[in-house]
Image (cartoon, rainbow, N blue to C red; front, side, top):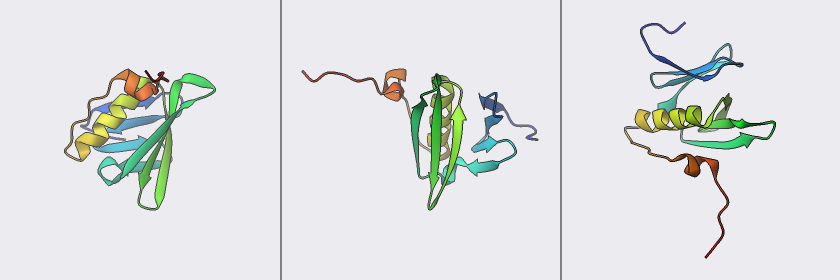
Length: 102
């Protein structure tokens, strides 16, 4: 159990949360976000509110499902912060809306 640290819940059904610079998938793994080289994600086709996220570290990856676009935003912002960067994304950036060319 994480003590003296704010936990940001990113998935209620499969317990997962952010604590400081760590992503935790309860009962499975803990990843230091500073070690993550890049992050990929896609919408969950069975539940359009959720996103499947892959954290890529050297030759390993960790998968996690997040409950909402705001949870995805929080995870990405915390990852950037762990690398001393600031990441500002709008929901449209994350949704990947299809736009027509002018």
